[in-house]
Length: 297
Image (cartoon, rainbow, N blue to C red; front, top):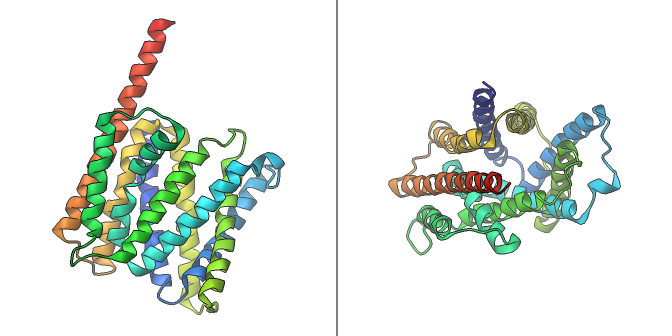
């Protein structure tokens, strides 16, 4: 029953993140990217700060500000900046499809930079998955969308963020880590506004509701993911993260009038298929290692 509840929470989180993406795309029609980052940073970091303090957790404890955590916050800022920029310039379905390559990038990064063993099967899956990415972006072809490269930067930054998260001490609260990540968006957004020489725009009327909705879906999605990971087995819920692409395709068609072509859908299928294979292969190897350890004991 816990696994079923966890799966439902992951699906709800992916729907919330898709709603957040759609609202950000709408907001980008009125507000500069830097301002959206500042708004998200102030709102979400304040919410997580209140949640952490309510549980008696210290936001400024020295152990919570190690070099690894500074690097994680930097990666969070880069990933958010490139992701929001991509949403403002590219179809939401394309952004979501390319973003699904993140698990493949994490597996490759773990092998290249942290010495984790990755066999030829998973390397082949990673290569095929990134062929799917190329099918969506189409460099050198008539349908090439250079702004989609922002999503690739997001994938790289998120992969680095998740890999560095593994090096964070277990006694550092996830609420404090989330506060740090969202607080970094304030600095990133301010820097972007300064570099672009852009002034902030004062929200009016219904725009306040869109901003509130964006913050609500962002925090709700995060909370649902955390709860899912605490109550269910990772092996049970991980595949359902790909429902975000399904929700994004639906939002793209119904809300933004997008029409993903066959090449985009084929590329997305390759990314999801190879991502699922890589996950299942890692689970199989982990089980094999545990059996060998028990036999040797």
